[in-house]
Image 1 (tube, helix red, strand yellow):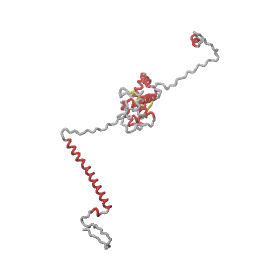
Image 2 (tube, one colour):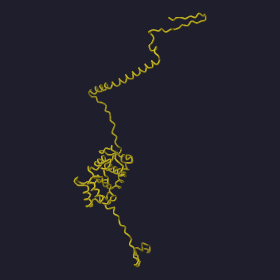
Image 3 (cartoon, helix red, strand yellow):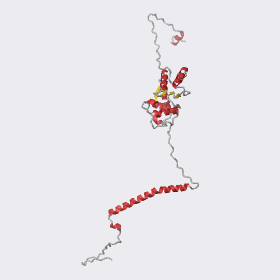
Image 4 (cartoon, helix red, strand yellow):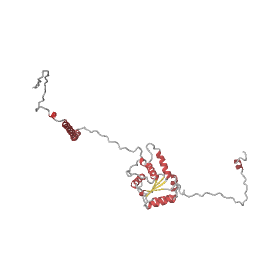
Length: 289
């Protein structure tokens, strides 16, 4: 089986040689070059990955069918998956606090507008209208309320293009209040579509104008009675003056008080020395008790 090669030299060593038979028994992979074998291995790997992905995708309906079969068994109950709770603000306004915060925000700067994404049917997020974290410092909310109603004791949320609003403005202006009333024309603001329903929710008044005195809404008893008529009737009865005074606004407070000038003595009249009474001399220490 192994052919032998012999050297004619007497010192030569006989070495066996193995000659691989070129036949059908040789491996096909051994006959391929190395780059081709690498490509075949990579292709096989991609095919296996594709096949496993397809198996995972097609196994979902089978899993659903198995779950349905279990659900039809008597006494079987699926595991309840708890939904994440809806996060609420750490601090929620009361209507009185929200009205004070919004009024303070609006009157601070003319450019302050309520964002359009605000839902007017729910309390507004305090972070949108306050300059501090009210959840950490709730006591500062009392400072905001006192400050806004001290600086603006009388606030009229009105419509610029409204006869009733113009009449109410004229009535309040004629009272000559000190501090002067604050007029906010809602319909001319960019956030009118958000601010108007917020005010309606907080004041329970669907129509403008809305008069706020010291943080409290002054509204007519019936819808047929206008706000201007109510202001006039309360002013004539004297009740309005008391309401304004409790809020810190003085009716007629803009009048200038005349300063009493000292009476100058007539130089032509002789000066008469006034005798001091006994009590005055005791006060001045002229007489000892």
